[in-house]
Length: 72
Image (tube, rainbow, N blue to C red):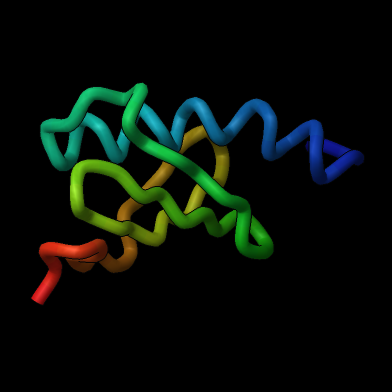
């Protein structure tokens, strides 16, 4: 269990980045991840935005939508 939230986020963010890239067939270097709250993260990349929940070393996509200039 992580005691410092920023330390936990630092380890989870690359995991979320990789999961988003894999899910949406996107190069992970184009994926930006921001922590939300309590194990939730928002990832944006390749015209898609996803909300991810991470626990026990696993990240699961909870919601996804298009975003950006070309989004409907």
